[in-house]
Length: 424
Image 1: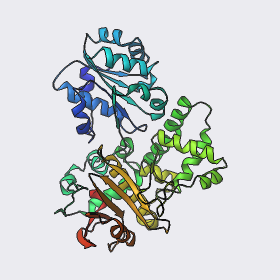
Image 2: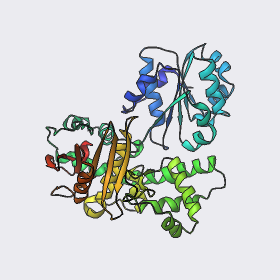
Image 3: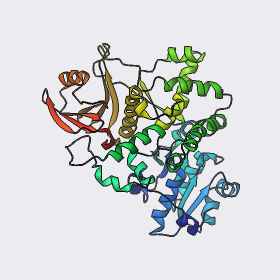
Image 4: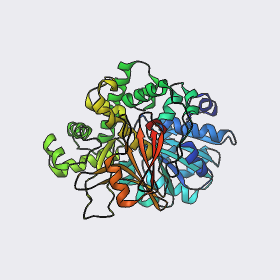
């Protein structure tokens, strides 16, 4: 167990999700933080401890990979209460390693309100199979993903550029006044190439970055697979992941994935579900208002980190040498930012007709639909697919994510905002 001094002495970087978690500190529900391995959940837990220690001292951190800490927690809430002196904020890292996590959280929340729980877990598979069903009303969940581009700038020591990147409100955008330095675009291309896993960002050695990204999949993801689902084949797991890399931002065709990897369609679907449960990929589903003319069932797939996209492609050469692939990277990055920024009443979809006409993203919520297209090439213009959507649905506004261009046009009573992808 870390002492207060050890917690305070940790060098930590701010994460944006702290502002979202903060209102839940004084509520009874256990706060559960999920996400991929190496995304910074332990550091986030310590950041929460930092924040709470400013106003109270009864903060206790337990790491379930430490046998001594595990023994203390496994003794149950009553024994834990005695150990911490009767009350306190208890932060438990890797809580799915508790002998009976469901019962522990249930007893603590229901019968020991003097103990406030903050928990982290690396795999939603563990939560889904052993935990979530009995925890309705007892937990609130947050997903922590690799760094956003703004967080990336802070980790890189380039905080000065944040003031040059005005925040864009997708639901009510305006044309910001700003000057986009060339250095920001250079950093954005680095971010796209190597992604946002904190330890990757903090390394200055390109070979080390590549090795770390490889380890995130081959060591940590496979470890979760074996620990949680005995009997699953690691080679098939990796092959299907690599097959998904090749279909990033495109419709997911399970028959093709099964054929390319030599497994049944049923097995391919099971492994894709595992990859999503382990926070390695994310599926985006189509908008279905008119099921006769829009594809209803086939989702698109995105990778949870663009550095893992580079690893899966086996290519870490600069994106300036790969103009055809740059658009895939940017679309994947924009998807991740939109997903991270979703509010409880919002959902993210894409629009595609059988004719092949497609809009990359639809932000749905608040009684309006905001179509968002990624067009990183110059010169920027209104894509024909966006014109088609505006004619069909007449949204109040739309966004085109560009490389550096910023301006506004009107089409069919829809305001089209052209904004650099780094601002989204």
